Amino acid sequence: MINYRQLSFLLIDDFPEFRVSLKGMVNQMGGIDIELASTGEAALSKCAKKRYDIILSDYNLGEGKDGQQVLEELTQKELLKPTSVYVMVTAENTMEMVMGALEHTPDSYLTKPFTKALLQSRLDKLLTKKIELAKVNQAIISKDYSKAIVHCNLLIQKGSKYSMSCMRIKADLYDKMGDFGQSRVIYQKVIKERPLPWALMGLGKILYAQDDFSEALALFDQVIKIMATYPEALDWLASTKQALGQPEDAQRALESAVKVSPKAIFRQMHLGDIALVNGDIKTARRAFKAAVKLGRTSVYKTPDNYLKLASILKEFITEESGINNKRIVDEAMRALKELETDYELDPEIQLRANLARHAIYHKLNKQDQASELLAKSKLNFTKIQDKMSGMGCADMAQACKDGEDFETCQEILANIMEKFGDDKELMANLETIVEDKAAFEQAVKASKINNKGMKASVDNDIDGAIDGFKEALAMSPENISFNMNLAQMLLRKAESIDDKKQLLMEVDTCLNKTASLRETDHRFVRCQQLIRMFNDYSIGLQA
Image 1 (tube, rainbow, N blue to C red):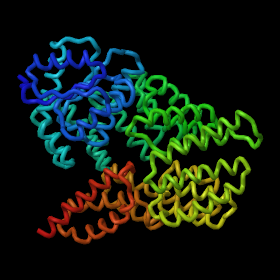
Image 2 (cartoon, helix red, strand yellow):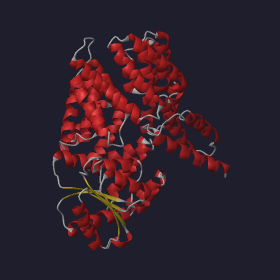
Image 3 (tube, one colour):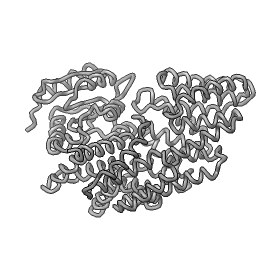
Image 4 (cartoon, one colour):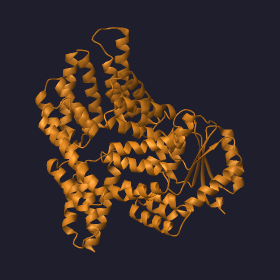
């Protein structure tokens, strides 16, 4: 029996009458620690100060963030405990709303109106599961993923009714730790018993990362046959089709996914990118306008959407004057102004906004304004280039090329290929402006060697993986991903030997190369896990 008197509640709804009604239901269940919020922003402010046990949020919350975006931000900022329950509540049942909500994995979903009995029954089931997985979730909260896996194994061994959930958690944690060999074993075991979509997706992603695109495609197709409107499967199908050199098929898959769930900001971004590859700038313009609009109230807002929208709008500009031309230029400039305002403390974004203006003036053949912006941008670039992203450096290289400073352009490109050679999207964008084809080919070759190391890692060939990553680093010693991969395998090897000192010195060298990683980088969490493991081993040696 769940004692709701001991639990804290946050009820989020923009209608006062429903908030009062819902609070009454919770009171009848025994709940007394109840707080209310009428907007997504107010809810997030409360969650920043207090961790609630149960959150019931309406999907539509009027102006500002909706329930889906509240859940996104709570998850991204780790304001929602794994031990907490988040239930999405809505009066709508459209495909767009349901898929948009479920994609972000609330614990459950209720359609208005509902009774107190239904609410309590649903919460009872959810909380019973949370209680069973409490030790697992506490370890996850502490980011001690190895300990969380141990607790999962204990639950599986005792035959818990949540054993399959434990298998899924284990696979996810191994993926986060970069230990794809272990997660692959789990996915294959589950699929052998029953082809569950999450296991098919997990194995497909690993195969995709290994460049085994045909096998990955077969798995994503299998998921879609099971669930025809599974947006994530369509997303990965699109990525795989693109990797196989079928960009038109990739765009069709993404367009299908957008019809099912259009409020996913990353999906709109992906559609915009692939539409650009296909030369479909009208679709790209729509997709990035949607991404900018969604981003205004989303934690996943990114400056790249503004920059890409401005770049796309530039393609509609002609040298001829006219009202339509002026509207396009004004739209692009407004996007860049909004970008600068929202990211006023980020010097890289300020620089990239100026580079985007430079590109527009260059297209308009306004060379005085373009030259002035380029000179200013070069000066700012010299101050921050060591901390610049790969795309930011690429923007600078393109501007130098447009301004006919070919020497600086090639210097920047050489640095990009050394540090970011494993970024396939970035390298594809660079190929048209790189003159040093030998350096470009070496960066591509290093990436392929790294992929061989990844395959050896998945096959649990630790020494083979170490050799592969070291070979890749010999060609690109500053590459952050290569250094992280080698650190991961060296730590794996350290588990099985007594004298760890030399290995840990090598790990320390690798991790020092990751110092420039931003928190917004998708590799940041994994890097923090590696640093934690390294520190644990180092403390053990000192003891």
